[in-house]
Image 1: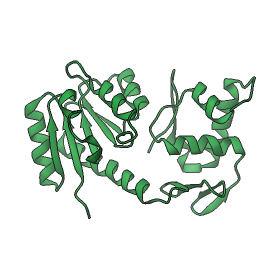
Image 2 (image 1 turned 90 degrees about the horizontal axis):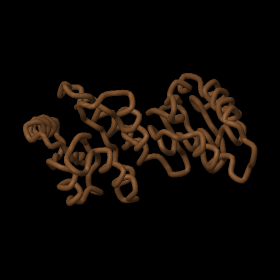
Image 3 (image 1 turned 45 degrees about the vertical axis):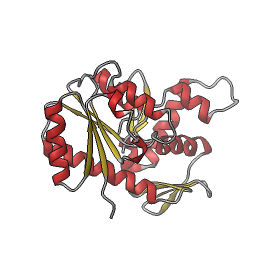
Image 4 (image 1 turned 180 degrees about the vertical axis):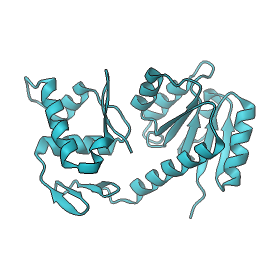
Length: 227
């Protein structure tokens, strides 16, 4: 099994050293950068996960995450924000950018290690799955047959419900606004109300049973599928 490569980006040098030491003890290959500018000089596409501070110099963690999201080579690298900023707005900003997770300072090393393991396990599951299947635990979408299964049992879905779930599961943890959902699911259709989206998502939550709770409403922003 390949050693996972982790990039730690934080302007607190002592914190970087602590994280690097403990993560290397866990068997990871770790590099550190003390600013987003320094990090962006590295070949980031070769890392499996990034621990990223929010409050840094001219390029903040949020700005760096947006830069990485815009590049196809780095867009799918999981990012865990580590920061003293833990307000609801900061959380929503991080998740809307596509953050894998969010840990507020002060934190325990064991918590960081546990969250990294979960994030890497998710990535491994996604990369091993055939491209025509999107799966989260026992929930799966077959993009070829247009079928949704739960515990290997097919669930009847309307076309709109299928497209919404596909959108969410293709980009887990990303917040989609109602306008984005309309553009991607109700293409070329007119007079579609916000209420129509809400009704479809309510039905969708009910149909996927225990995974309905994974479809989370971000008030003022939209919806996301949390993994």
